Amino acid sequence: MKKLTIIALFALFSYAQINPQSQELYSDDAHSYTLVQTGNENLDILLKNRLFGICEGESIDERCALLLKSLDAKKYATSLVEQSKAQADKEMAQNGDLDFHSEFSAEQSFVSQIGNLAQIKQFSYSYSGGAHGMEHTSYIIYDLLADKKIDITNVLIGAVSVEPLYKEIFKGYKDMLRADIIASQPNCDKACQERDITEFIKTFWVDNLPEDIVFKSEFYFAKEGVAFVFAPYFIAPYAMGEPEIIVPYENLKSIFKEEFLKF
Image: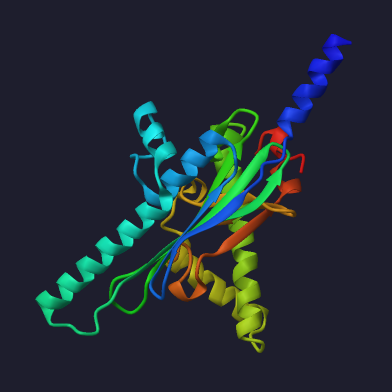
């Protein structure tokens, strides 16, 4: 009976639901900060650090963890915006550019909890002059059972998985391009599509090694498969934003560890 009770408690803990809460720390026409907190202490510290970048990297030492834990996030966000505005005023005064302005946002949102994996998205945008700003989406996938963040190296079977995963993403890339061409050029026949896809690959894909594609993308677990998200310009022009390529779970059976394919 005691053994069964321990097993039951273990199962309950491994799938315990978190309680994500979004907090708008600051918002005006040019700046915004939104923080997600979940009730899991280590994950919440990690999320604060991802939003503000106070500790270097994500291997947070004890001293920095204590700092983040006690940090008044709303006051800190306000101070960052005030510093940004002061810097913008200084540059306008120096350059005499009355139209100069800057924008920045960092907004976290809860994506999902799948079993013991919690997924949080952070979308960042910055503009400091020029034709357009730059955006970046990142994901934190947190194993609540192991109480740690996981990355692509944790889910791959091993180094031998890099090449086959690269090939799966490449297949999805060509499907994405074909769908975009069909939508934007309805009169483009199959030969036309293949010609355009070949040009895209030459311009945006071929200079990336398999390691670049696998390790420099963001990823998260979606309903139909694993979604790989790429920064603007990385595999497509800026106009296509941050391309997202979904590899079906079925295609990852010999690439991902089995425990990450049970969704």
